[in-house]
Image (cartoon, rainbow, N blue to C red):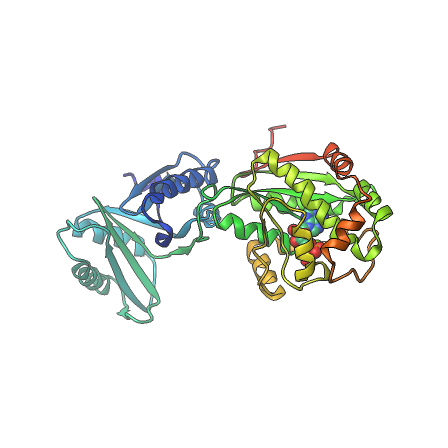
Length: 398
Ligand code: ATP
Ligand code: MG
């Protein structure tokens, strides 16, 4: 261990989700994802250690960058930059001195935790020994309830890991452990949050965006690209399908009375998305629908839309309030992109007050005038596929 040239971090995963046979799979997937997240930051070594992970990186990599990347890894409960020391009280004290050098703190506590049994000292003894040592080296006092500084010591086989600052992780499950989804991504606020919720449940999420270019401008596509790229930082690779929807809408408009158009648009989006899902291997679709939020999202209309689907449609925001969704969008950084002005395809040729209680039979009846095979071919023939990755590739040197 050459502390000058290396830096270390201890990473904790969400124990609650680790049951029986799934555990090794979960840990392997998590480790794979962490390596991906740090892939461009230099030679990393990652190993499992007594129910946590120990990461080693060159000291030259800025910790802020490492922390930012680890903060996006789903399946981590928390993590900390740490100083490793051998199981030797004097060595631990020396490591602690280095860690605390130059720091002033009015109060502190030591929180030692043993991750295994065979040790020459108990965590209580270590708390007392190190506490007494800090009182000798610093002008401070012990405060067990509300300390200014907590000194964490984790005892794992052969090592004591010391740290002062714990960063919260994403929680959830490692992406890639729950199967693949296809997200219907508008340029709006809700659908990116919905996709994020499913990423956090361990799904890989590809994206499909419907646009009405050239009837409308390209703003919604630009937003969809930016949103999909942002969400790729949680999953390292994804596909975005940009689907021309204007021609399909023209056909729908010619056959369907205004009040039903939004619902029929949605039913066609679902059908087209399912065709793409077959290509990607997605097992379900995801939308940003939230019950009652807009006219197209009444229970009646959701039912009418869903009847066009054969795959499950996941709606992780169905029970969330707009305020909660906005808060989450701000937290994950999609908000600033979503609120940019755009021209959304759903506003094309629809009345301001669409039917809120579409009857399935009535919608099916008006749809009879359309040829689904023809409309699907129209849309799928013009699909543009964008491959996304994270970390993004370095720009070629000029
Ligand atoms: P969002 O904030 O996600 O745009 P919204 O509140 O505007 O949602 P709707 O316009 O009714 O609600 O859209 C409902 C859902 O249908 C969206 O969350 C999204 O999943 C999907 N959707 C709507 N428009 C598009 C589009 N142009 N491309 C892809 N999916 C779309
Ligand atoms: Mg929208």
